[in-house]
Amino acid sequence: MTPTPIPFNKPYLHGRELVYIAQAVASGKISGDGVFTQKCHRFFEERYGFRKTLMTTSCTDALEMCALLLDVREGDEVIVPSFTFVSSANAFALRGAKIVFADSAADNPNLDVDTLAALITPRTRAIVVVHYAGVACDMDPILALAARHGIVVVEDAAQAIDSFYKGRPLGSLGALAAFSFHETKNVIAGEGGLLALNDMRYADRAEVIREKGTNRSAFFRGDIDKYGWVDIGSSFLPSDIISAYLFAQLENLDAIQARRKALWQRYHDRLAEPLAAIGIGLPSIPAYATNNGHMFYLVCNHLEQRTGLISALRAEGIHAVFHYQSLHESPFFKARHDGRPLPQTTRYADCLVRLPLYYELADVDVDRISDTIVRHLTGP
Ligand SMILES: *Cc1c(COP(=O)(O)O)cnc(C)c1O
Image (cartoon, rainbow, N blue to C red; front, side, top):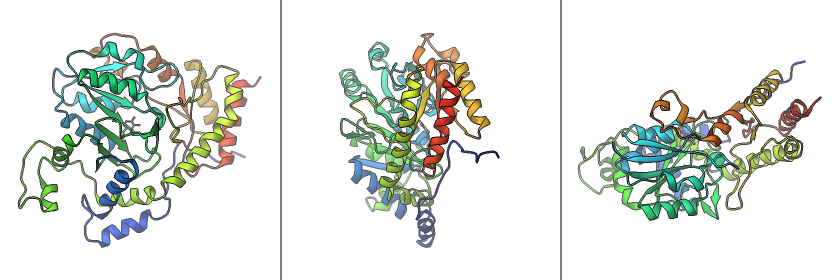
């Protein structure tokens, strides 16, 4: 008998998603900034203290808005970790910025704070930090360094909902932050994102950029009596249907987080000892950070070991996947890179493997996956 396949990820309905979508339709307005969009904004502002939030069609779009808000242009440099999703860098490359890639730390894939200072030049405009797996970067030294040089910090918080740095919510630390509600994240809307603004200097212009360069948001609030084209922008605001789906998830955020963290802990309990014995790394959560149950990963000793593990799991119907390929070695960027080796980035690109983790994953699935891993890696 072949065992039931376990996918890497599975989108899910927590409960009231379809009810809220029907309500949005019945309200007579499903374009952007409807009732559910406002509810989502209020949720994030009240729960995490972000000064202002704007739902976007994706985290990618929120990052592109950051690049527009910072007026990033040709000649500017932006520091981005190489071990991240394309959008963290592409949003700034689109504006003509020169991307300067940073290496990851040895003990987790977040950017290596010790080598960051050496990357700063008089042209550096922004540092994009990525809280990998929802685990905080060491923000205090990063923010101090940025402040000293007049550089803006942007948080790519795509994976970092409901996670904290020294008690402060991720997404509240940089001037700007971007979240994702893509179906692979903790809280989902299919595609969707959020721009969080902590520096209110950007607030008015963010509304304009999100509304195709018009001051339509101010018009709908009644602040002005007609609206027009006042700046550059694009269409970054999602339909209220997206926010209706998302809001049903946000209402249940605590239950979702509790379940994900329980699954994460179950993996950890089963794998930590047997894998430590053979030098395989598990996620480590620094004392200043929290775990939001976004991702459970292993760091194999070498590429062949990872390839073997992924195919052994595949043979049992278990879909485990590797993650980012180094952006500094990507087909688009390779010739543009300054040639610095980024050894930790390359190691994570070659050796990191992510295990299935989604709300509806069962405890018995975690046990089966863990047992298969231990058997394959430590067996005779
Ligand atoms: C998922 C992800 C993104 C992209 O999010 P979208 O909402 O799909 O645009 C960007 N950065 C990181 C680190 C991510 O994990």
